[in-house]
Image (cartoon, rainbow, N blue to C red; front, side, top):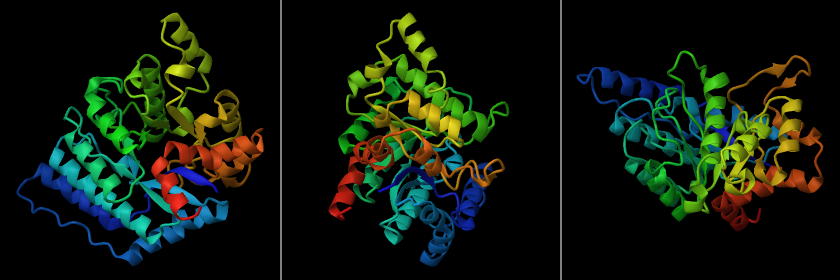
Length: 340
C-alpha cells in the first residue's frame, strides 16, 4: 500500500475562496453583512477531486492520501479569533466531506484556528472536534502564525503545551506547516516553507521537548528543509553547544517527508536520514506543478524518485506505508478495521 502523507485540497470549489474573501472584507468593514457559509454540493466535490488529486494518485499508483485544507490559505496572520475559528471549521468540514465521499482514498487532517499571539484554546477545541467527531488522524501546526515575521515562541515553549497535551491524549501527530508569507522578503513557497522546516528542526535540536512529551510526534515536510543537506552542521552545533544527541533528542519523535522534487534530493534524503524516519509524500497538486523539462515528467511525481533510490525493499515499504501507519495510529486502526 502506498500512503501519501501530505495532500491539500488546493482544488476546492471557488465558492470557498469567495467566502473567505467576504470574511476578510467584513473585518475591514463591519457594516457588511455576515457572509453565509458556502453551499457546495457533493457533485462539486466529486468533480474537483476526481479530475485532479484522485486522477493523478491513480495514475501514479498512490492508494491513500492524508488530506488537509490548503496550507497557504490557512491565514493565521489574520488577527481575529472568531474569524479564524469559523474559517477552520468550514475548511475542516469540507475535508470531512471528501473523506466520506472517498473513504478508501482520503483521510482527514485538521487546520487549526491559530492566531498569532492568542491562546490555543480554540485550537485544542477544534482538534478535539475533528479527531473525535470527524475521524481525522492528525493536524497541521503552524510554528509561525505571523506569516513570516516569527514573533511566536519556539515550539519548545510552554505556550504550545496545551495543544501538545491534547495531541498526546488523542494520539495524533502534527505536520509542521506554515501558511502564506506576509513578509515580502520571504517567498511563500520557495523560502518561507523551507525556512520554517529548518527553523523548526533547530528549535527541536536546541530544546528538550520530547522529555516532557515522549509520545508527541511531528512530521517536518518538504524533506526536512535544510536539515538533511546540512546534517553535519546540526550535529556539530549540538556537540559544540552541549545539546543532547539529535538521534535520541529529536529523531525518535520526528519524521521527514519526501516532498523533494528531484532525484538527487531524494537520494540525499534517503542516504542521510534513516528510512524509519521518512514518510512518502508528494503534496500534489501543490507548490510545484508542471513537468521537469529534463525528464518530461511531473516534478511532484515523487514516487518515481523513491522507486529509483538505492533502498532495500523493506526500507521502501517503510517509507511507502509502514511509517505512516506508525506515526498516524488512528489511520492504522481505520485501515486495519477495513481489512487493508
